[in-house]
Length: 299
Image 1 (cartoon, rainbow, N blue to C red):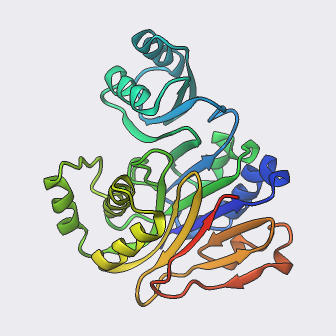
Image 2 (image 1 turned 135 degrees about the horizontal axis):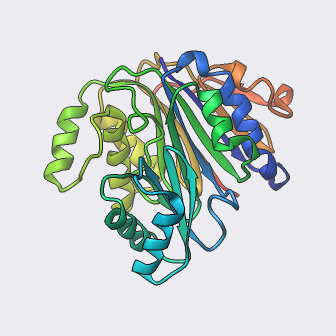
């Protein structure tokens, strides 16, 4: 079944409340996905300090401080590690490919689940509300956040199989539904040199979108191409540092509701996740139309 929530803040006065508001939204979706959960936060000054690159690892076998020290020696820069098990955040004043590759050298058994100058990704197995609080999500700040509660259908209940899938720098995607032809798309991408980390159908969608963006498409075009190529039923929320987008399949069988004010744009699987947002009583509320691409850009 799964539950999706996302919050794109237009008013900088709300940035310090991003984590608090997103946690409240996530709490309402626990029944839809009790297996595991994940969150993506854009712009938190602790997890993604200005001027630094952040890389998120899953299941690193080395303590965060020790891992950061080794990577720092490798790349000749100060690296800071934050342990939010099973997630490890690493950040440094360098470029994204340098830190990603150094992290892979230092912890080859770990999985890179997020990278970029603005993005931190947190994942875990268990009750979503408890995970959010253990990670410290209520205290997070920033301009945009996405979260997902998972009820596994296509792959095992693991943190690696939870959403969001972040496979491009400062990009993430969450999904409620199932792609019926994802294996054929996956094989095409593999023949083009794309490497996958899981058996999850959502990762195929995320890597398809990331490939389109890398080849020069904007987010609107990338999602239109996805809608043309993928079969199945789905509601997707896709984010980059500058954009926040929603699309549903041709029959729109998976629930979604959007609320928009001059201070924020929010999306959730059910209205109850939006009900406590400030000013929601004055929001424009609507259900996204089938196959319509909705994109909001950071001001």
